[in-house]
Image 1: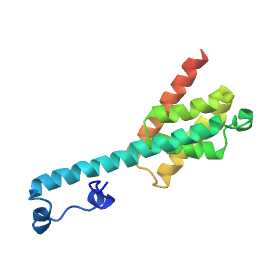
Image 2 (image 1 turned 135 degrees about the horizontal axis):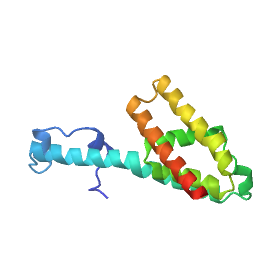
Image 3 (image 1 turned 90 degrees about the vertical axis):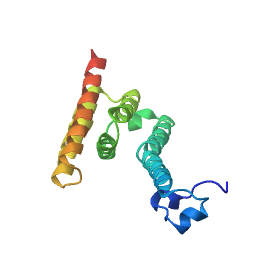
Image 4 (image 1 turned 180 degrees about the vertical axis):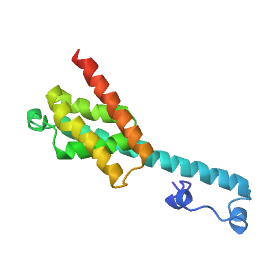
Length: 156
């Protein structure tokens, strides 16, 4: 474990010169390349792996509810969470969230009226309050549209 990189290696660039000599003569270019790789790895973990892990925990928690009908209707928390997922992930993660609600008995009409429509409004509100930019808004709405198409095709 002594050779594991610390968080400081990811967030703080290595010092050149004496620090490079102390690390076995690593050249500044090699050090910078390694630091960039570690930084990209950390960003990937933060942006993709951790959110998906947390989502899987949320889904597992919902799956263990004693009475799924109690959670079958979308509520304000679901609207906020789905909007967050639409802005932060590809549509598959958000679609999985909606599918869990569907699996727990939420009617399609309920999902449209109480979840998807309010989510569209919420995305617009986030943009108006400048909590997301126009590119993020467009991506979120595109992901939402994809979920709507999948729900419509599953209905037929």
